[in-house]
Image (cartoon, rainbow, N blue to C red; front, side):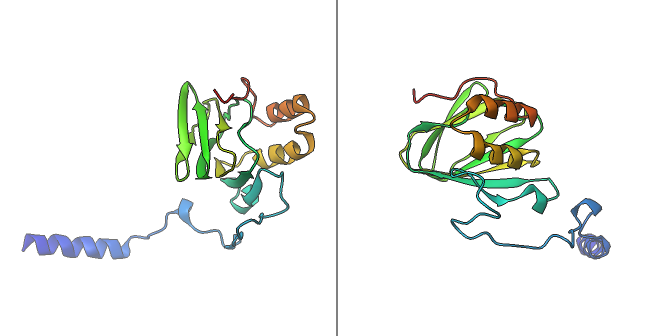
Length: 179
């Protein structure tokens, strides 16, 4: 009998408890959307990283990019740090090695690598062909950085390093080598 009373009061309480908290209330101004395969949310920011979800879509909470490269092996960005953002990499195709802090992490299709804020990280594409999805939480100024990369790289790496530093993502070491 006590069990029945407990289940009944628990069920009654759950029916009267709101399911959404104030912070989880949906924003009616944000509309769902789809970004088709091979397409960008807006104009591609650079040949290797296209914007799929903008910080403008999420109130600055998150942004997502996709990158594809068929001319590996090759180094990724110089060792850098995001003091205000976590970065997540999901390998869709190919093989990579990541440096996150003092750890080296081998990753291939289906793997997810987490780069916590304040921890220096970079990667190296080991395979000829590769594709990955990467995100920033919060979005920060990453769209600005990716846009400037299009204009400055590979011709002017010093200017790009300055842009990154001015937008809260300083370089703290060299790119990875294939070793």
